[in-house]
Image (cartoon, rainbow, N blue to C red; front, side):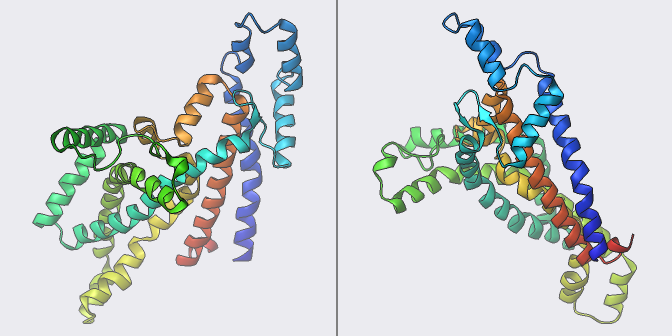
Length: 327
């Protein structure tokens, strides 16, 4: 097991440098940079532009910029945001925290709902409940998250127009006068605003995960050792949850590697549609502004979390299935 762990850790080193260089190279392939926009401002002199390019190393070749950025990165310095005039980490961290308000509860809710639905569909195959859940899953797979968010906003506004009561906010993260509220009321206000984004972000993923769980359970339930366990007279509950479920859930262990980067990647376009100040709107603004180090810093943090998550997944898989570490 020790050899397997060391081998997996050593694989991460070339992966990190190769992925960061590729990401940095792709970012550099975009025409112009943030300072190109300043050249169109008549108030900014060419001397100022040249000084800024020299200060941030933008006048150097790509490989030198990468080495300079990597040197700063090894010192836990993600660079400097041109648009916000502040270190990248200080700029992105509040947005990451805002995204976690949606992502962490939605991830927990996703697994708590999707796995039981998948198990039920496999155990009660072709029953009325299974057919209804399968239909809803197909609908969920076909509806994009941003469109589902628009539907939720429309329904809430229609309820408000007819009753005069806004059950949940349709945009933003806080109410007016948020700063004057006591700490507990502030948390409750954020939670109130987060209910709809959490439900929308979860509903879009439940469909795929529940179908995957259903398929895995059906495959395992058809194995010879399940029939043998039933032939020995084991209780159906023991057969399902001790033998079948334990093996069916193995592919889900492999998906744990994506949980860590998802904590900072945000809830996608749900944040954009519902005006939630998370990482996705911020990242899109950074791309539009060609804020080089913000983009590179965000991709790097995501990459590191993805590698750590995959390492954890590999170790869990090796623990669950000992055959893996001997391959």
